[in-house]
Image (cartoon, rainbow, N blue to C red; front, side, top):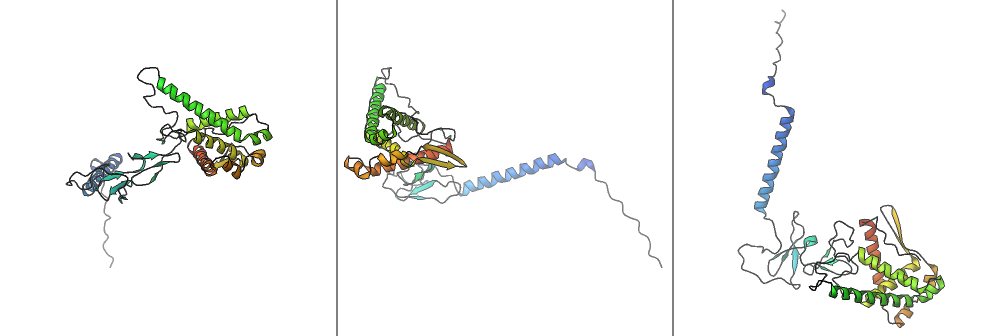
Length: 298
């Protein structure tokens, strides 16, 4: 006996009037995701409030005396605010990093006197992220109230005289090498003076917030001379830049360490200036690759 035949079911047609367009459906999903993220962020702020620089950790605390360099600060473990620190004595919040309000500047870098951290702030003027006060960043009170800039002009004249005397002294120390190389003393002194102006203009190696002494400029001039013994070139991202040309006569005829000490110069300070100058030049090659900070040639 054959089984009865069952008629195939007919597939129902979807009513196109009840189907949302694909573009509208995608928009609704994106809106729902955005609302969900907003709610998650709101709940997070409720559970963990946003920390602000200078606020006390607990809202009900009585007023506390100001913090100082003698206070001990500890980093607050917070992925959203990694630069927040807390004072152990006064329970005051301190924001370190680039936004630090207490940062001070030396010839090498920016530091925070409260947390004792070295801040990663660029010292090259051409870098867009630089917050350094370079030589070409003049303040608004350059001119005096008399209107003619007499005080500023006198200060600039004294600075220029100090730099000129320092470069003359550095040239005098390098005279044995200059005579062997055949470089006139006047030309080399001008090279040192121009290079000092170039470095001061484009970097913060000699910022206006520090007192520029003749001794520091002499050390800079000697550092430039001694860097020409071995030369200096650096390579960054496949690009090589020669900043100081190697001169064999400088290596043979420049005064040695004992002679510099006998003349009253601190060899360690000159070496430290060389290392600092190398750091600035290497950083400039990364932050401002089109900037030419090479030592001028004769």
